[in-house]
Image (cartoon, rainbow, N blue to C red):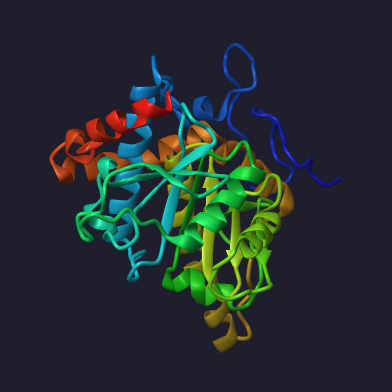
Length: 321
């Protein structure tokens, strides 16, 4: 008899050589964070006493994700954007200014856009273009459509990477070739109707529809990758994971094309579903992002360096309260 899609901890898989984690002494089904932690359980997504401290957290972490992108090949001219829903004003989203290099962004550079109208309601002028507050128009149309459609989504990431664009031309979802890509098992889609550069709301709506109501990512044919998350940390980590998974798939496809005798061993649906359940929960994905976030804080000289300009943003928000 085939193994169940998700076996409980302590059970033995029916697949040869596979075992599940031992059950905890109190016999309850461990949370994903409990399962991955040996010793003290790692903390999940933090909570905050007020909106200001919550906003500081998400914007400094967004800046850290951008700086990590700058180190990992995600920059190309003015392309690429991240949005984060504001904790106090959920009808608004923070985005990066157009033309500011990812590697120099701080919390104080971010612009607050009204999701419905697109109006820039807070944020300072871009130092690279004095006196001007400019967001990426395509980014607004895509991100606004997703934030409207998905109340569970608090962050959206999109960039034009080499592996992501290369794999996107096939308009195919990724195969479950590795343990890590199982984070997207039955949780990523393909938008196979390329509509050109996004200069209107309709294309953004089509991308949001392709993403669907529960997926974590969408591959945009001839365009690139997009990921979403409950935190900017989750969406940022998933973006890098999706991009690397595209690179791995391309390498496997090339190896098989040159060696017809090679056999691809794809992870079964049962095992992939188990991996997804244990590794793709929002608190685990938040934790997965922290090493890169903390490294960016350290390289910048501390978290305060990435919080630069935040006080000015808070002043600008007073009129909205």
